[in-house]
Image 1 (spheres, rainbow over the protein chains, first blue to last red):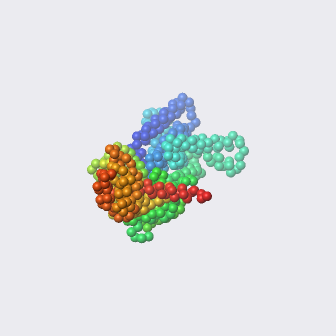
Image 2 (cartoon, chains in turn blue, orange):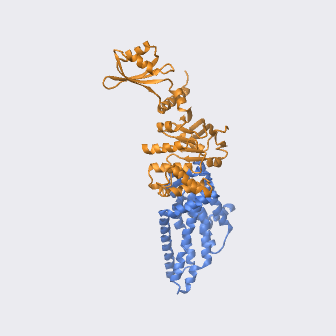
Image 3 (tube, chains in turn cyan, red):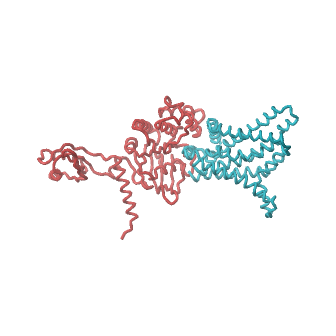
Length: 254
Length: 330
């Protein structure tokens, strides 16, 4: 455990001194700020059923597709291509501590980026204070629910990035693999889940399993304040499984 | 395990796919000894070193460091080893002192001793005044090697393993790294591999020669010289007839064999001889060759075979043995 904290502190420090961190942060906040502005503008012109916060978090997949690979592709693949993974493994540090510290570093930064988006409703509310509806911008329930979704689903998404980074020594290949796997999990899972809605006859157990993979419906539930344990189990167990696999890959590819 | 043995390797084998990187490698290293690991590219030096440092696992065989099994207690062994890998990978965007402190924490140096341990390692490697706050990415190759060695020395490990510590360095840098390695003699057990044979010859107490994944020779330079390049050898520079020179020596009962003779400039010839008797025959040869009408001796010098000759002879013999073992008998 001691090694985990030493490595995590090192990871966060390296993230803070790396210019690419600030570039990724600026890109993310720039894109999400634009999205939030577009949602507010749409609300002015057309009446909407959903709160702007819910609409904003429904596009979580757009930044996920590029931020997660950017944050994780360097983690293990970069260390392996540089050779510093070898020097790390000559210390009494366990492989699991290495993988967990890489995961925790990227996860902390991922959450920090999303927390920074809280600034958008705060800025919008301060600018629209005269309006009667400005209070809905800071409606706590959907905000907390959506953030809970981002935090829980982030475990799986970042674990995917760490896993793909452990598979190769090329950062580019790791990034492309992460993007593909995220696409399969988010879009593929949603499409499989939609089979139920489109009237395809599925056996009972498969029906439940396929329904379980619909990430967008998890977000709907969280935003409405419905906290189900099944998504927690799905994201956490899959995330832990991938991190375990990453440890095995490091062990096997030493 | 004997108390004065620091490293014991017994029948260590490791395969990558279908190819054996090392096969039944066995050797021992005494405490405080500096041992050179020699072998051509792909001989299995790095694989052995990586297994000893706990990065790789062996398919069969065992290795002990300080009496502890590497396979059974890898973390305990890692606490006793300082390892500098080939090409010395370092993070480019950290300062030297920050990197060494980070490594000291990972090597479980007690918090109150970290500062002192880092200072000591930097002093030993002459980094304290010159490169302390420099970014590693901006350092020269020589200083990077010093940082790698300082890292290996952190925490006062029992065993230091260095894979090609002098690769890519200029002669001045090689000399300073050699001094540094010599300063560790007696304090720590050191294993180092190098392609620069004079380097190993000057720094190491003993040599392990490995070829095609097998240990082909091990011992001190003298013992290896006796085994692979036996006999007293001499280089003669003379003008005149080769046959007359050999006849004169034979007449005086000096039993020698000519290894090779080649013509030099100005009618001079260079002849390499090996004495068939074990004693020193140099003075006797000089006396025998004085006053000969057909031969004028210009110089005679005894030749001590260097490590390069030993290495070539040992690897050649191992190739011959391997090919001989593989050739089917009629």
